[in-house]
Amino acid sequence: MRTKAYVVGVGMTRFEKPETRDWQYWDMAREAGTGALTDAGIPYDAVEQVAAGYCFQASTAGQRAAYELGLTGVPVYNVNNNCATGATALMLARQFVEGGASDCVLALGFEKMARGALGGGADGGDFATSPVARHYAVMAARHGFEMTPPTAQIFGNAAREHMERYGTTEAQLAAVGAKNH
Image (cartoon, rainbow, N blue to C red; front, side, top):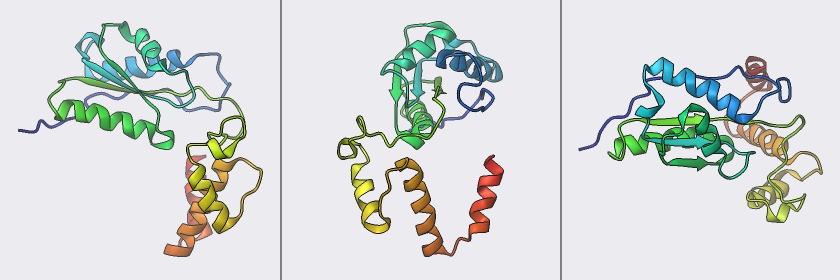
């Protein structure tokens, strides 16, 4: 029999531009994680596993972030899946509950970024070694490739293709941008 999973508490930090506050990713995790636990009405020691999502921190940053909530010896799974990282961490937490591995799992996401455009995940500018090298090749064949931030080109060209395929207008895309800013 499959158990249902429910989100019972939510917490977050204020979204802000990089380097506007003097804090570390574990400070973010403490603020958001404490908020989620308070919202759920449970202590950290009720948590049986943690799925921690981030992209730009060291490989075991999830463990360091969980220390801020009360290190209880639970497994911490570090999730890095670019733009889908948060959704992937939440899905993993849900699978732990629905699969019967745990009753209470914390999905924790954080990111401390630097100012400026995102790189493309390339190793030292070598786009051939990037995990998304195949995407760059397809994009370059369809739309060309400029030596500008590749992530912006990928999203811009995806928007272009969406407009061509579905008739999406510039005004509709601008409305999304205006809402997010």
